[in-house]
Amino acid sequence: MDFAPELLRALVAVAETGGFTRAAERLNLTQSAVSHQIRRLEDQIGTPLFVRTTRKLALTEDGEEFLRHARQILQAHAALSRRFQASALAGSIRFGVPENFLGDELPHLLSRFARAFPAVRLEASVSVCQDFSARIESGELDLAVAMRRAGETGGTVLRRSPYVWAAAEDFMVPPGSSLPLALSNPPCLCRTVAVEALAGSGVEWHIGFTSANLHGLRAAMLAGLGASIIAHDEVEPGMKVLAPSYGLPPLPDLEFALIWSAGGKTPCARELGRLIADASRRLGGPVLHRPAQLKALAGNPV
Image (tube, rainbow, N blue to C red; front, side, top):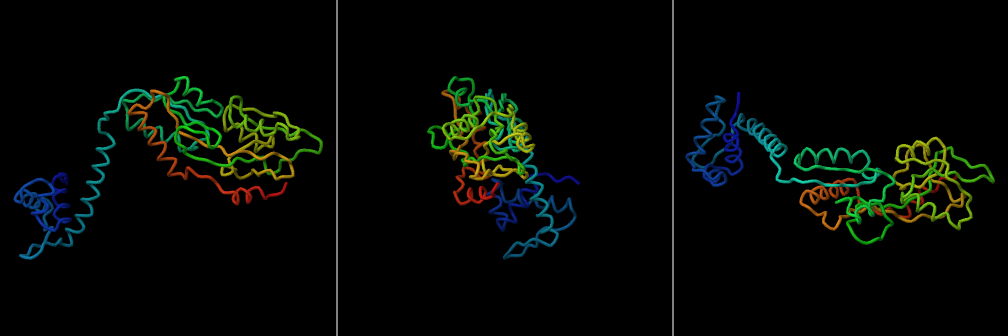
């Protein structure tokens, strides 16, 4: 049995407004037209939906149940219309984003954007070691999520976290040996920050493993091939924060920021930026983790 959406809308309007007159005003119809729609619906299902008296209008028991289903159908119909309505947005977006931003949520977000705006051509660059700020300045990209030191100006901060030295739980450096590091290829900011922090620290170190992707770095860390720097809230099972006994220097806070090129704020790029910012807020950013939390993570002696 098929039910016309306009009949279901009439039922919902009458139930929510408490009468045919107000329902007619909401639907921009005449009172007689609304009454006719309700009669058509009752004839179609073969049972009254309302009990009418001179003083009030109330739903019958069948009417209550039918109303619940009618609302569900109308909600699904509205969602379907929104999903497949023609989008006025068109054009192209050149978008850059670090591999470690939003994790597994990022591909789903980009997929939702592509389905919602099929006339927009999205060109996404994902990497753990690209300098997206430089590519924005050169005009190679329209929009990017840039990883940078906390406190830099420009753009919109999406997430901020302290970084820590971390390695596999069973990671050890024999006395007198050089500390192996697992880092991305230049110009990765994490690599730059690690090397700058170690300069003048007195710690003997060497690059023991490099990878152009985050999966390779995490695998190397978990295999005990080297220590690396990582946001403290991304320390995985099987990893540990290296204790002060290693003599490693403190690291600065790093942040992700949404930045635009000079002419990049097109309507479709602004919409993608809004979705990215919303997703970041939903997943907890921007957050600056407190020293007490960091101390708790770093308190595991090596």
